[in-house]
Length: 233
Image 1 (cartoon, one colour):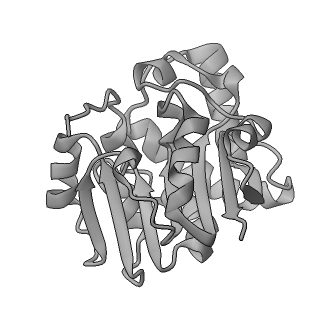
Image 2: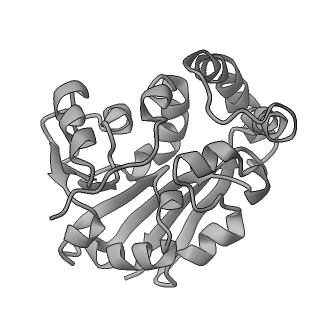
C-alpha cells in the first residue's frame, strides 16, 4: 500500500470540539453497536469520543501513516479498536459491519457516490451508513479549499450520493447557531483557518445553544448535515 498524505491541518484544532463531538455522537450512538468501520479515523479524536468500548470491533481505517501513528500513541482508544493503514478499498465485502462511519471525511473524496458504493458490500443487511459533513455549498470558504474539501452538502446532494440500496433513516442539519457564525465568516471575516480560541468559543457556547435551538427549529438548517442510512435486506 502506498502512503496517502492528508492535506488538511484542522484535526488538532477540532480535537478541542468536545461538546460538538458529544452532540452529534448522541445522534449516532443508537447505531454504534457490534462491528463498526470508521473510514478516515485521522488522529483518533472522534473515535475516542464515539467509541465507548462496548462494541465487538471498531475498525479504524486511516491512509495517512503519520496520523495513524499519532492515533496509536495519543488517542487512548478502547481495546475493541483496531487501527489499520488503508482506505475503504482495503475492505473485504464481508457483509459483517453493523455500521460504517464517514465523519467529516466524505467531502474530502472526489468520487463520493463511488466511495459509498464501494463500502456498501461491507454492511450487513440492516446495517447503517452514518455520515456527518459540512453543509451548504454557499458557505464554501478558502478554509474548505485549504483542507481539501471538494464540496459542502445539502440534504438533497447527500442523499444523491448514497446508493439506492440504502434507505434514509434520518437526514437533517445540526448546529443552527454555528450556521450564523459560518455565514458571518463567509460574508464578512473571510478567515482561512480558525484558531484554537475560536473553536473553543464555538464549542463551549454556540454548540450548547444549538443543542437547545436545533430541536425547536426542527433541525431544518445548520452548519453540518447528518445522514443515517440503512441497508435494506
